[in-house]
Length: 363
Image 1 (cartoon, helix red, strand yellow):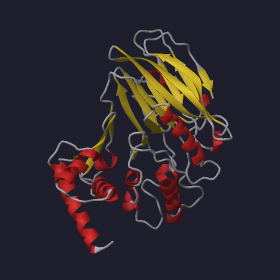
Image 2 (cartoon, rainbow, N blue to C red):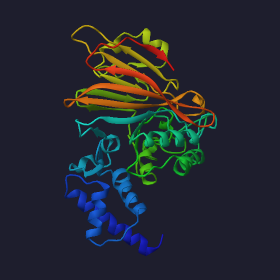
Image 3 (cartoon, one colour):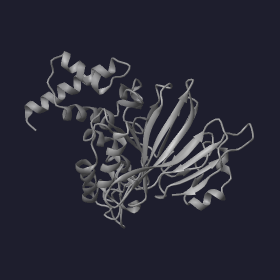
């Protein structure tokens, strides 16, 4: 880096820092417009580098995602929270339009860095198929990376996996698709990068997967293993492992057959549960006739990898609105054959007013 480039970056940092500090939140487009009014020349790469530094290294800004606007960055007013556990783990996703039908794709467990799983041809195919069907949001439910494969995990192994993502993961145009990924149990080896030569007090903060946004501007990592959001009257929980109860999140399921043995999951406070981790897709529903309990639909998301080549690799979801509330949900299955051709199959139709059939199905 030349001295002139360094000075330009420092000036860019100062302008963005002050703009965020003086506002209630700005999008990347708003920041670009501001920089242009100041006749400040910059590269997109430098802009995302500065955002990454403010968000991760300094921890003085936070990011909120909105269905229509995308990421909104804002300054954390309480300086005591800068570079704290709050700034490192804060995340919110808000649906800011509760009138129009919503379309999104759900994938999981791509395990980049594991030759028996990693398959960017599948990812390219399903992204192309989803975009051609006017789907512009993707939720990735964890284990984006393989992380640790044996008894040791080196810096070189971590960098190989990160570079593989940076060079090969689909990169649609910003208006085509935004992807939101949560942290899976395998990702934890990279998100914080554990290494025996690093002092214990520093281990959780060596690498932050949110920095991937610097290389893929419309790929956002949620720094937790789950998040929840609400589509009008319908609440959803997206998690990597199978969180059973919204009131008892420590209760987890690790095998499909455990669902029939665990009764507490019916106490869930969410209308829809999404989970990865098990690699096979499944649907588990209940339509409880008692007035004080909601019908619940629990969807296991299949692995989007070689593991499922020739089978179901992703879900396409369509939420239907009537009178300002979500009335029904259609979940279609995407199947990928050995030639990487994607076909859509009718999956499950769910009525949030009830009248659904109880279903237990493994895909």
